Image (cartoon, rainbow, N blue to C red; front, side, top):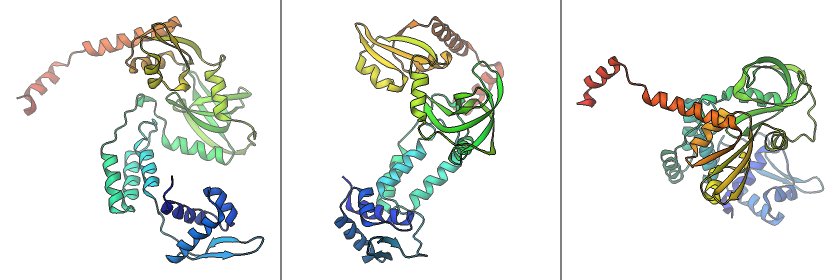
Length: 333
């Protein structure tokens, strides 16, 4: 349930974002009745917020023209949502500058009341995220550039490196950016292939926004397209892996977007499709659950390569110079 103070501040936020809004519109947006809207408006007027009300068929509420509020007025829940989003940038695997994150966190913290600031600072100090694939982080600036082109319906020119390490130059009509199974994908219409395509953002070598515009199909659903392409029978390589653990345990570890889980006498069977077997091998090992690969055989090969790399790293001995340096350091005495 929302606290009344939060509702009052939300009314104020809506008024700041709209030149004028009627009472019924405001009530519908905030899921309350018109009488409650009038009461909240009165509360704001009582504390000196210059809200003007007009009556009649086209009447409504608006802030007095020229009136400006402080740039940030956040409830504790809103501030917590922002802080969780900022702290989670490493988990989202976006190459966002740590300086930008720390600066934003400091600004949010500065505008909060002392008690709320103390609670949220405690949250920030004891919440940790680890990214599983830091080597594939997309550049945050690239995500912003792509999003701007999507919003303005401008074509983009891409130099794109495929899974087979082939680099092609393409002109793409971008529709959206989707996070899927640990990667970010650009979804759009590829003029080179003359079809809708997905592009892993970390494989985009260069992106240039063009002045040429396009018209996006009104009924195109990026999320549904990803589901059809990668969760359906046509997309990626068919994978069957049986986990020797209870179905409930496996369901807690593997998101539904990774495939379909079915209970077996020995545990749980995962049916999935994926386009990068080396990546899937790393993911399976990260789950820390015993499993057997039913198909494809190439996934077993990918697991062997991963194991060989791990053994090679484990067997690598430090050089003589490194050993001498460790022996001479104060910490080793």
